[in-house]
Length: 357
Image (cartoon, rainbow, N blue to C red; front, side, top):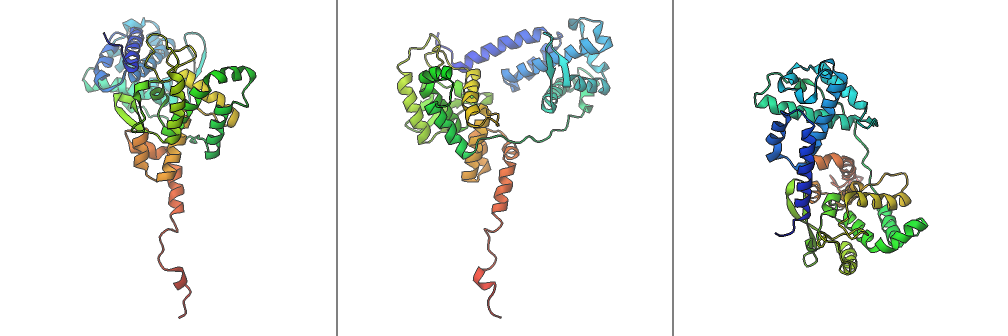
């Protein structure tokens, strides 16, 4: 039997995780997850399962009717008994609560909106399939979202970040010990993120064979399973070539032979490790900005848009299925471009404006 790819392995792990999460929900919820399976990824369904578990936690803790019963006894027709007021109480509950480990949990407007959106999808599924006659979730208004400032690195900060990765001059003594072992890898990884705008999950999923130096591209798996080629420039190529010279001298642990980026434990590097190394270097260069791998993606999108002015190209390269998503993120730049265009079109030659009458 051939070795499963990274994405096939992750999908199996997600399916196992999802099954465990569903076991904690009322039995009829299985139908919902089966129904949405053809149109959603395993990661999306896991997010739904987490959100629904929070909802049923709320019913058990806060609703007098449901406090008297075991969660497994909750039936579909009980959903119809809830009112808009009950669901608005749930929104209030989401702002501040305690989890099963008695840890404080808070949600801001975006977290609340996601959980209410999950609940709306849950109700809509059963209502659309005529399993319930009343749909109170459809009447609940989502919280108003305030636009967040898009955090990204400036051009000089990008150069400083890569310089710090290469030299490690401002790292602690302990960090410098690890830096000596990971410098080439870290430089290749951050150069790739900054030079292509790929997602951190796409980066850690790369295999050695996904790098195509002949055509200057990497083969990646986008969200939803779509496979595409993303092209890179000479700076990314040089960094990857240097790293691969080192990578081919490492003997990975079994099951990790194909992985492009390896941890010091000789396993495929994971998302958390990439997040930590980005944070480590960025904190030195720009301590007031909370830089994550996603912010490096935003930095690439900003630079690409400034250079090309083509929002559709940016959307395509970043893998946005809807260009409106891209426009929302780069609205400020669009306004900047519109203002800069005000004097581009000339109505009359300047010399003629003050010609003699």
